Image (cartoon, rainbow, N blue to C red; front, side, top):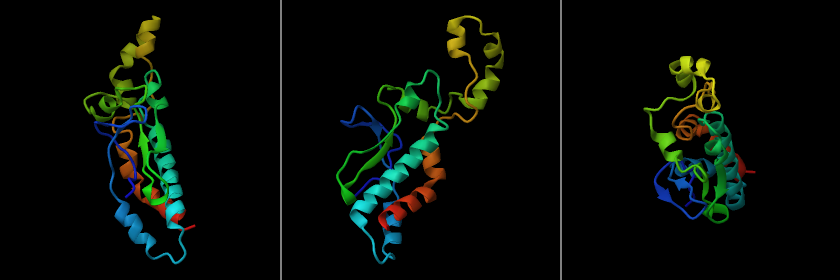
Length: 168
């Protein structure tokens, strides 16, 4: 059975050290597909999973915290499984940014607009290159849970993409 998306977790896999876990929901997709008369379920299902994975990656890229850039650059959508129903499409962060899990899970750290407000004085007073390397205005929407939040928010749209891929 195919995995929809990797959100977060501590399990290492052999795809460049990405940190992966699971998100459920495949049963609802397959339930919707039963009502379709002509369906190329195998290849179309894989196409739909890839499209949904790219959609999720795009949504997460808009809110992933950026300090120097390796975390954002590490975002990937890939099929680590087989073809058709055996596809195992994941969206992952972490290769080249081993701190990805910490940034995703640590809700005590501030990002985005909250960072900008909390460190407004330091941001405006930064003079040296060292100070400017840390104290600069961050993107307003940056946040922890940068993969989980859009996966929950856009779940219906991702399921629709999988359904569309499988039913064309």
